[in-house]
Length: 205
Length: 195
Image (cartoon, rainbow over all chains, first blue to last red; front, side, top):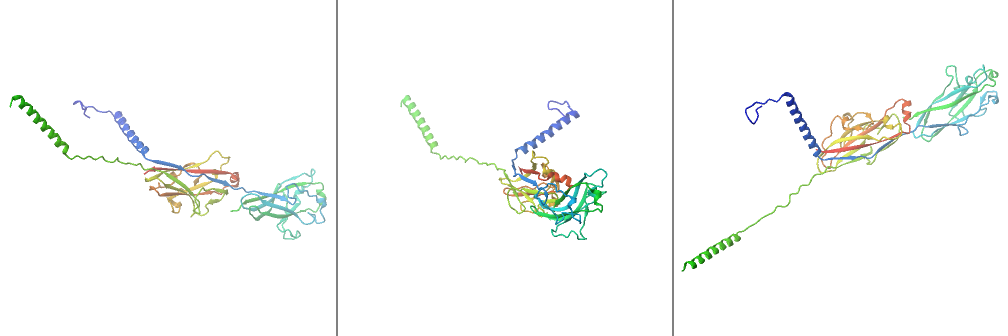
């Protein structure tokens, strides 16, 4: 490169060339930025879009309309060893959530045998049957009876499944019968057992 | 004629000649014109957005009683819409559409369980999900980065429409049950730039 003032040649070294190039690039970028800033822009925000999840809830109550424990005294059962001796124990299932649901399972859980040391566990000879029919014939051979607990499932087991849909606000009543399933009732004298009924539901798809 | 008298007459003649000359100058036609001030009016760039429900109803969109395994709207042919209108006087491009999920709500936030997908079309066109964003988590961020193509220019008075659908993937009940009764809120911020 020749200087303007005379015939002396002046060469720019590579770092200087790089610096000049960088300055040129930066200047170009600044030009672009300035151009962009000079253009009109407008912004706005839309309305808020709220989303709320539903709630799935079912309440299980016995005939008393409460969730208080129901006491069963097997010494008061008749010769057929069933309780209640007449009729059955109604169980109400209320969909108190805001989503329709399906009753998928009714279980007995948390069995605790409070009987005397060495006594057979009462829960393993107690049987329950469930029906949706208030006029159920509890002597019907086709009726399925389930042990409250077994050796394989000591903490409880499913006693009914796929009990149908339960829309929001609807109530389903099931009827429960308990019977003593052992021949030697005396062996269980003074034994006690406690179990809960647990209903499982899933959202209706 | 005496010399002095001749000098006075000569001066008077000269003066008369000058006056005549001046009178001739005043007799010329003259005209002038002043142009009107030039008017330059800047264009303006404004944008409006409006939400559109699947039934084409306009106004805020909301969902309640959301549950896992569902999609809103249920049909792929339907969508919620964010109609973006260039209400200014110059052509504009959509520079940005940002989804902003409100924070500060109770934990868990329902947005953690939800997914959203977008399709950007001229207003009035059906969504084309095959050229959309695909399903992505409902999280704050730029929407345009999720779309395969940048939107075209919006001329004054024209609109584009951001279609969107929401879904709650059917996960494990242990996970989904955490969100029963939970909620979330989000907004779209839209920016236009001069084309």
